[in-house]
Amino acid sequence: EADIYQTPRYLVIGTGKKITLECSQTMGHDKMYWYQQDPGMELHLIHYSYGVNSTEKGDLSSESTVSRIRTEHFPLTLESARPSHTSQYLCASSEYGGGRAQGNIQYFGAGTRLSVL
Amino acid sequence: AQSVSQHNHHVILSEAASLELGCNYSYGGTVNLFWYVQYPGQHLQLLLKYFSGDPLVKGIKGFEAEFIKSKFSFNLRKPSVQWSDTAEYFCAVSLLRADKLIFGTGTRLQVFP
Image (cartoon, chains in turn brown, red):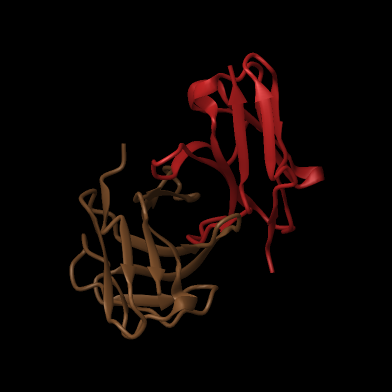
């Protein structure tokens, strides 16, 4: 069972508001990720981090920003929410899955379902 | 760019029926392969993974998947499904030693008693 927590689970907010989606993990993983998922669509990577003070943009362009000041915490911020930001946001963290560091296993939080009116 | 295709978007089965969900990827190099499952109201969980070795991998809850390199496929199977298998199933691929996962669009499985 993965120990990765996202809050809030659901958020309904008006256009123009600043929001921060929280993500925390207690597994000591260096790598953390944010995905965006629309209904019936695949998950798209929007941000990732290899450790403290490391942040990178993912494959899908996003107006959100992230920060990584502590290993366990990887919040995502939208400075001015718009209806086009309505989606589900999933946070994940990872460790390597093999002794030869062949690949990583990502553990996911429960997600935040965001609706911007 | 790499991509993952899941051809079955919605599958409806009766309990005890056999299940096979297709997954194909487009990348010619060495890959790591995953199946994740999301039960209603729960987070994504790893069902099984393939990194190397025996191409037939077994996961939790009686699921298995077979990696066929020549077909770029990693199909998920279960000989006899249960109502509790109702969930959404995602296939994902990452390049060897890479961190980014590329997901398919998911297959929604509904199992009726």
